[in-house]
Image (cartoon, rainbow, N blue to C red; front, side, top):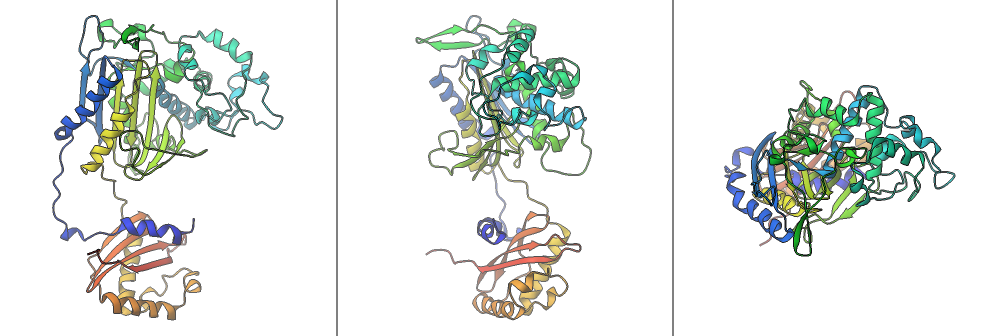
Amino acid sequence: MRWKSGLACLLMIGGGTSASAQEPVVRPTVEELSPQIDGLFADYQAQAHIPGMIYGVIRDGRLVYVRGIGVQDLTEKRPVTTETRFRIASMTKAFTALAILQLRDEGKLRLDDLAESYIPEMKGWTYPTADSPRIRVRDLLQHVGGLVTDDPWGDRQQALPHDAFARMIAAGVPFSRAPQTGFEYSNFGYALLGRIVASASGMPYSAYVTRRILTPLGMAATTFEVSEVPRERLAIGYRWENEAWSEEPEMRDGAFGAMGGLVTTADDYAKWVGFLLSAWPPRDGEDAGPVLRASVREMAQGLNFMTVSNRIGSSGATACKQAAAYGMGWRVAQDCDLGLTLAHGGGYPGYGSHVMLMPDRGVGVFALANRTYSGPSAPAWDTAVLLDREGLLEARPVPVSTVVADMFGAVQAAYAAGDLSPLDGRLAVNFLMDRSAENWAAELARLKAEVGSCTAESALTATGALSATFRLDCERGKLDGGLLLAPTTPATIQALRLRVVPPPAG
């Protein structure tokens, strides 16, 4: 898309009044919104027949609100607390993806390596067509390996012994499509990634994730082995069938743990969410880990096979459509209200869960429940929409760079002068080829005749280190504008846009 085409959207959101003219805005706290948040989850609990659930909101690295409702077991009726252990099912996939990226950072694998380099049993596979590419590590991360969608089959493979999985791999698999031609969600593929982690690291997958990710984050109550959890701390998993609950079998850690095996608490999971959110925005300063901030942000790159879908939750039918793709362990979407979102559900025999991050806002919402496939995604998203409506999801502003501020001052001087002379030596080679100095002088005269002189106290909104939108307050109206610098040293102006803001209707 040309910058000219995209500017219209930027101009709609880039302007504003100067900071000195703004009235103080009093917003509620998350705690003050708790009755509405609790209502969303209580309604869902009743509708979905969930024995117990816990949900939380993380903001700027802190668990600012958390509440458990219902019971973790129907026999002793122990209430759900922040220390109750829930299986999080496929929300485990984000841990697996980050382990792969960590190993990549350490030079122990490459994302473009063939998966069979680490899993020799895959070398004998028969691919669906003669021109099929062989599966890479990154194909498994993003579910484009050509393997069939395998919910709910994959959920029941959790406890499969590793030697049995090796035999299954060696026997080959039927392909759903040629690799790299479409997205299909594959638990089998993430189980293969667990095997790759073990091969590249030289230790079992669960041991690696525990040692290199969970322990550094202080997630001491999180484990892959459900038998290690004290019974009085475990949310027992139930299914709802024939208008009654029945207990689901507990599955021990096995070969499919990398796709959905983690058991955790609300307190521990909040540490994980806080760590992920801390990767935004990019910045200088210590990169304390356990994984590089840049690698965490890499998980949000939904690089393939975009879809258009409704937002989850009650606002989905009327909200803007989302553009979404699968990143690395996350469904990545752009939402017109919430901005960049990373989300994932967890469905498992006896459990359902959901998490969503809004990294540009520094906010995350998660919920864990103990009923089969009861992922509380709708109340999680509705909570995010509530926070946004109440002004608690402010996007972090992009800092205005020195060079943009300097160029903006020169643009204001050019408007006041009525010609481009204040921009001498600041224009890129294309600028006067695209529009002559004479035509610019005529345009500036036309604008000044319509709105008059403009104040220097104007809102400047950076859209990057080399671009910005702005609004000028003028004698008889307002001007919206956009400034785009060229990739030159020193920086020069490649494009400038100015337009009169239409007066309010009525």
